[in-house]
Length: 218
Image (cartoon, rainbow, N blue to C red; front, side):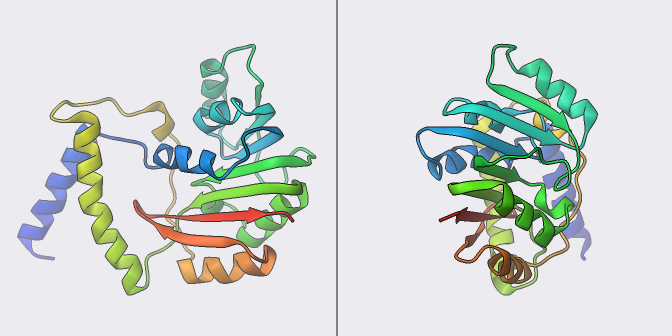
């Protein structure tokens, strides 16, 4: 890597450190568009500070958030009104998933922390007939398509940060304080394993180093 390239990425890191924005929250509205207007129960795995769980509560009779980090679960409880339909629990999926069934299960930027096929099988087991599973996940870049999307994401990342913050510096959102881990599975591996567990699952590469999975338990 040349000195010029190193300096470019260092400048990019400084730019984003001053104007952070949540790539996962960017997909929340898309997630809601995949779901029914009303449903009885929902489970959000890897619920973090509870932003998505609170969105789900606008349509659901009850929502359960599950996260392995006790501190972030405490923060989610602080941010959630006491009269809300949302409850949070500390635990590692898939073993800590409370018995359902759930009409909706969501999982954002968490599946790569978990045993992949086992967790998808647990989601299938806990999903109601007719229910919907929506995953926003991370994959390891390998193919030319992956790298092309990565280049596009670099550009769009700057655009989104500028649209959200302009020249202003911004504090890091509470939702971005969770521990991170790089993905190990490629998108092709994810597609093969997911469709073996969830026949008919729809998977698609997305911007900002994400992929999506939607499955209906018909």
